[in-house]
Image (tube, rainbow, N blue to C red; front, side):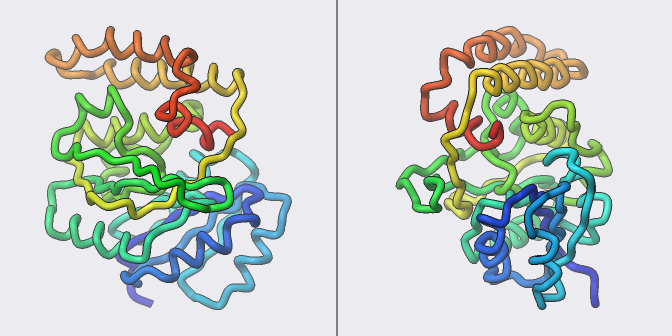
Length: 267
């Protein structure tokens, strides 16, 4: 088998309720030169058995003791063979043209490290709500991404494998803000691209607790401290207003934007 162009990493923890539909959306992609690494993060359901029963040779099962999504992604990155890496949460769905459009973008823009897409929000059953999360930010986005995570969720970006060689892997201790930390670190070194279409269907889950919101506040603050530790001198003035915003997060819990950023990743 030739080397895959894209490695798709799917962390899965007790996700059999959604995983088959998620995998179907991957196998329906119009771009087909990929491998799928399903990282079973110590599940107690039938994920391993189900994956092993699939006949598509592009699907591969990996297993680790339960360590969380960030560690599962790192396990996948370490074994990935693709030139590009895509992450997909086990309950999200992709439009059929997603990979084709993002691979073409990276092929045509060799300096870009990460290309993301817009997001269509869905309810827990997978029914679109009609809301689209969008951003036009592209190029040098560092100043923008420290103020707002325009990538949105981990299922949107396709990233050059080389980026992880340069900036390192996800930091599990920053969960549930490890995505934001990673995108910021990539933005220091590489331009971003965007496909201005909602090519990811993101399920919103209603579970959220005050303790989880507090964890998001704490880890987001840690992300900002890390981001500014080695910031360019002209970026330092951005730090104080951003930390003020983070201190305001508990009061923003009821807003749609805050629910989007935290609702599922904290569950």
